[in-house]
Length: 197
Image 1: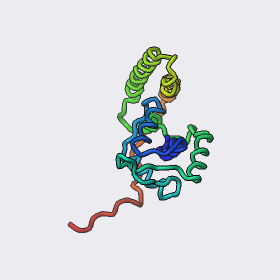
Image 2: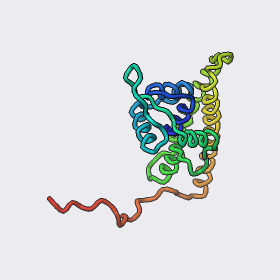
Image 3: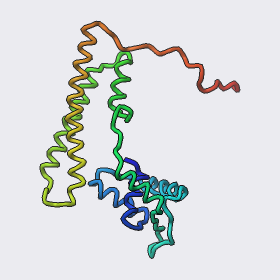
Image 4: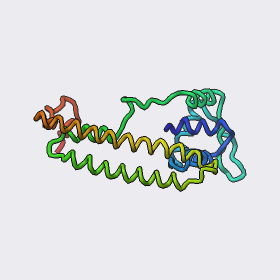
């Protein structure tokens, strides 16, 4: 999720200082997203530079308070009402890791898939238990429940995908195909050799 957009979204509700923004984001995402306070202030500096927020005089505790500008409000509303791409162009570390691993000689891809499956099943069990123990009559639990449900569905989909990958790799092995490759020829570009010795 975009830190920039999240800060703007929080500021649409009123003026805040940096720690308050961080607290609002963490609370409103069910405690599932922890942001470094330095990242909040770095992003606020960029937002101010770009004319999306303005800093106001310090409050009684000496903290700088930020308010959203009309341009920032437009950008926040655009983000709040636009879909987010989760298609093939979105990075997926697991998919990239498996795609890379299957091409590296000597990697036991079956063991890697097995370990990932065990890890994902444990995560799924933990999420399911936590959801079961949640008070569904407490409205403050809703942000966490929404994220937990997505994580549960993603874990279930990941398990099905890992099953599919195993099937694909079995078919490739049955056809005696080997996707592993040696290094390509060195690229023409790269760090120049240091001539001083």
